[in-house]
Every structure is written in structure tokens, then in C-alpha cells.
Length: 382
Ligand code: SF4
Image (cartoon, rainbow, N blue to C red; front, side, top):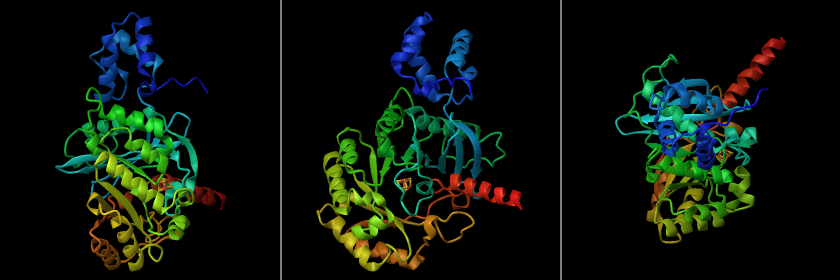
């Protein structure tokens, strides 16, 4: 295999400045290139027409335009959600999702690792195990991919036009494959790039980082002084249930995670969301809801929290059962769970995830592909 060029989004400013100086380029080119790469919806270097042709061709022979290539893209039947399976330079794959909320916002869901080491029992990505961490460029280039798709309406991929609010990505959630706080440095560097007014100019208030409760990194994030939103995956109110579905609980239990959440709220003065996947017969009982409400409200700051109740996401072909064979509770039971939380003054909403017909839950497209090829393998064998 030939040498792989570095992706431009992975090249540090000092290196790019040196590269430009060696070619006799004026210092202002650095900012110009950074700005154009972040904003351009071109599909390669030739689209940066504000740069001289000779410089464009030198850049093309030194740096890859993007660190991700589209392997496959699928749209949900209602055209609301689009999901991409993206190939990395070493052949691994990640997923990224675009959710245009027409008239209001264009949200994208980013992956931060190929696979995930956290092994949550209900998660398709967790089934894969950890493959590797993503680089800054591999995170940011997911946003560039969607900006291009928004501008081109997914042009050339045979999809119906996007029902989009605008051509820009307005909101970013770090909730795709991987645990963002287990790839802390590149994730923080990507947040800085996405929020830089000279680059992507996305407000930090429109960025949400999700974690399964890596306590020391939650404290580190609180100390960053960045007004980003934090979403903490709780999924149970007692250690026994939580440890059974989230191995991370053996290291940081419910109390530690709730305490770190309180410190985050205290330090940042920002509201925090608890994510709670509802698994029938596992964590959806009225007693569990009551305990959850009590524990969240115990510090007296329940107004700073919101609980997102998410019925477990089915993988296509399994109808009601999510990864791990879990099933969704009935709508009545989910409503009852939400009301029990509200009885403690804790706001809760039941969120039906978008794009279920395209397996938009994290890791599901990748897992589905894997199963499809396994099935094909078996068919070939017959
Ligand atoms: S839910 Fe998140 S943290 Fe848990 S295994 Fe899946 S991707 Fe990893």
C-alpha cells in the first residue's frame, strides 16, 4: 500500500505554516486555507478557486482533502434523516447521521471512535468492541461531509431532496459510535475547530457531548470553560441494574456519576440531560422511576436536569428487539415512567428516535452491514 497523505484537517497550524513558508507563500494563506477548507462544499482541492492553481495542485499532492470517504448513504422513508457509512484511510468504517429538522435546524451526530470499548449491552456499537480512536480530522470531516450534502441536496446519490432548514450544519451531537470522553484530546480539538468563528462558527451552545459517565473527564470538561451541553447516559438508578447493562458502572457507580453531573452543573451553570434507554422488564419499573426521580432531586437542583427517555432502538429485521435482545416497553409504561419522574420535579420526555427505518441508532448501520455480509457468506456456502 502506498503512503497515505495526511488529511488537511489533521495537519497542525505550525506544520501547515512551515509547508507554506517553504513554498514562498505569504503567511495569510494559512488562515485562508483553513477558512476555505472549513466552509467549502467542494469535493476536492480543485474547488478552492480562491487559491492560485499552482498552490491548489501543490496542496493536492501533499494533503488529502478529506479523511472520510462515503461508502454508502441511506435516507429514511420520510426523508427526515440521512445516515452515512464512511470509510477511513485504513479501511475501517464509522457512521454519521444528519437530522434536518425542517425550518429549524440541521443536526449532525458524530462518531468519535471506530467501534467502542464501553460494551453497553443494548448498543450495536458496543457489540463490535473498540477498533481505534478517531483523529481530529476524522471527526470534523463528518461535519464537512454533511455540509456538502446539505448544499448539494445529496446530489448524485439518487436520494430524494433533503427537507432542510438551511445549507449549514447548525447543531452537533457527539452521540455516534464511540465514547467521546475516551478520546478526549481529539474531541476537544474538534469542538474548538467547530466553534471557531473563522472556521465552522457553530455556537458551543449548539454542541452536545454525550458520555456514559467517565467521571474524571466529566470534571475535565467542566473545567474547559466551554459552554457546551453535556448528556450523561444513566440508564438505571441503581448500581446492580446499571452494572448489568453498562460495564463502566463497575468503575464509576450511579452515585459518582450523579455527583460529577452536579459538579458539572454547578461549575458551568448549564442544564444537563440524562439519557435513559428504556428496556422492558430491565429498567422500566415504577420503582426504578421513583428511585431515579429521588436521586436526581436529592441535591435540590432538579430544575437543572432533564431526562430523555429513549425506547431501545430496534435493528432492522429484529422488529421489537434491540441489540442484546432487549425490547421496548409499551407506550403507556413509558408515559408512566415519565410521570413518576415529574412527581419529583424532574422534567422528562419520551424521545422516539428519528430514522428508525434506516437503523439510525449508533452503530446499527455498521452492524447491519456486518450481518448482511455474514448472511451473504452463508448463502454462498449453500
Ligand atoms: S452506548 Fe455509547 S458508550 Fe455504550 S457501547 Fe454504545 S457507543 Fe459505546
